Image 1 (cartoon, rainbow, N blue to C red):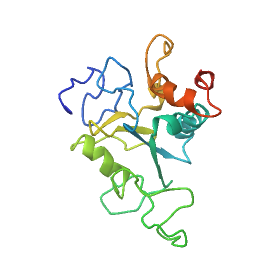
Image 2: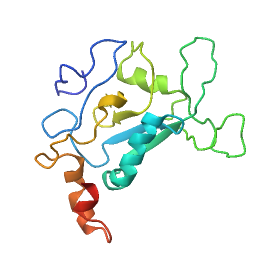
Image 3: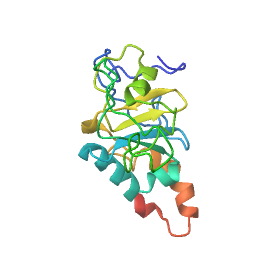
Image 4: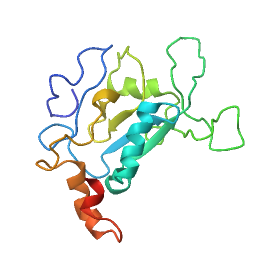
Length: 182
């Protein structure tokens, strides 16, 4: 269990289970600037849906959420659990080690997404999949289930979630307004 905050009972049950946290003011995953990092794959429609929604609502920009993009295939290290990988070098001309549109892991510098999952749960046995949201302060995965991957609960107008964190920044931005996040 990260930090001193108790995790919700449905957050993560076992090494083969996914992560089911939500950002809220009344839980361990608080809506804070510079707090989160998103892992996506451009090949994955579920990750793209999250990426598109965050871009349209300008959440990445105003909450300063970092993003790392995995490649659509894995490197074979022979253990069968390598999974999705990141670009290895910074050089765009290194096509053997890089995939167009993918990035290095901008959060940890990991080679594989599984390495990031193992930082959250050192005995994790499930699929290291995208989209996945990482909490930089608690050093744990918030959520990796696309079906319930939510940045704001449906009652967001009653609660303070990421859009409330962004309110001050948005109202100060030259073209932004609260309406852009509804």
